Every structure is written in structure tokens, then in C-alpha cells.
Image 1 (cartoon, rainbow, N blue to C red):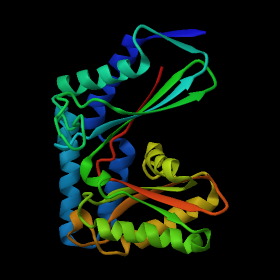
Image 2: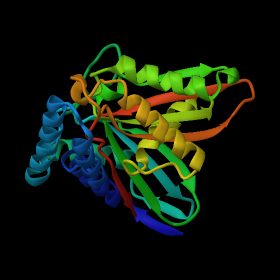
Image 3: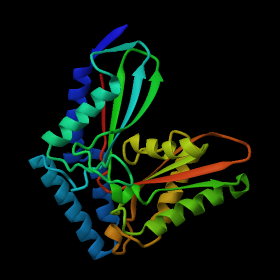
Image 4: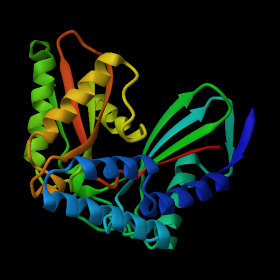
Length: 280
């Protein structure tokens, strides 16, 4: 049994919060650079250039990419041969979020109650998703999720008769309705299967994949490309001002489901697509 101290977890999460909000993943920069060459609209090209310049300044000066530094979404893959000493795992993670958002001068966006709306002042609690895995390591994914893109997410419980065409139609209609709100060019996470509660989680988990990396299943990889092409034919364009590059990538995650159902969820990520991964 391997022991990991909770203060190591806290410090790890703190550093991930600061880094994720200030340094865009290289894969996203690469996709933005490619989209610049593909964009046909002069206004769209200028917007992508401004996004890349903003990302460069944020990286060099270690300042937030965007004023909305998001909900701290934390996925934890906990090895069953790990024993955490010190404080409770969730407390250690939330303390890391608290320290990271305060020390990194990141905006605190979490309210303790959805109707009373009192800010917690430290961006906690994080949205934590825990999975028990084999081995003696812990893997953390941190996905700071901004409100503008998260608010454009959608879920549908389709009948199986809707089939592939129904899934595609729902995804495209969701992006069309979102328009400029999620700050395109976007990355689209799609969950297919499961049930009401975990299809949304599949869509969120799709964002843990490096930006632009295809689903390993050739069928879903082709579907990702098909959806990306259809989305970029909508004409929404960068920041919704028209153009070719509405989305940078589509990521699909699929899971088993009941014979009577075809759940589908869409979770949109803005062009920042903030993500960090650490293994302890």
C-alpha cells in the first residue's frame, strides 16, 4: 500500500489551477494556428490572431487567459493501492482550489446556493468526479470550465429510432442555438449512451482528451470529423461574427445504454479549452 500525503495533493491542485488558467495547452494552440489558415473571413482571421496573441501574453506574464476562470472541475482516478494520509481527499482538493484561486488572483465564481447566490469567495467547492482504478497512483485532471460555454450545454433522451441522424441533428441544433455565446471557435464534447445522469458526464469527460485527438474507435472518429465539418458549415465563425471556423474539434465518448433509450449530451468548451493532467 502506497501512502500519499494530503498536503502534496493540495499543492498539486493549487499549481494546476494557476497553470491551467494561464497557459493554454499546446494542442489548442496548434488547432488555433491551423484554423487561422483555414478561415476565409478577414474578420474571423483577425479574431483568431487576437486570441493567439492573448494566449501568448497570458503564458509569458502568467496572467489569466480570460476573466472567467471557471468552475474547478476535477476528475480523480484513485488507485486502489493508495492510502491518503492527513486530511480527507475532497478537503485536500478543495484546499488546493482555494489556495490556487487566491494566490493566482483568479476570479472566484462559485456561489454556495443557486438561489441565494452568496459567493464562497474562494471558488470552492470544486466539482469532483472520483473513479477507483487499479494500481498505486492517483491521476488528476483539472478542467476549469467557464460559464459562457457551460451554459450552452444540452441533453436529450432520444428514442432509439432517432438513430445516428437524430444524434447528429441534436448536436448541430445545439451548436446553432449556442451561436456566439460560448466564444467560438469551440471544442465540442459529445456523450452518447449511458442514462440521464452519466451521459452528461461522458460529454464532460470528452474534454479530458488532448484537443483534436480522435476517439480510438474508427466509427466514432469518422463521426467526429463529420460533425466538425457540419458545424463549420453553419457560418457562425470566430466569436460568432461569421466565418468558417466555428469549432476546432469534436470529441465523442460513448457508453452502453438501455434498449429503450438513446441519450445524447453536448458539453461545449470555449477556445481556451483549459486542461491540466498530473499523476502522483
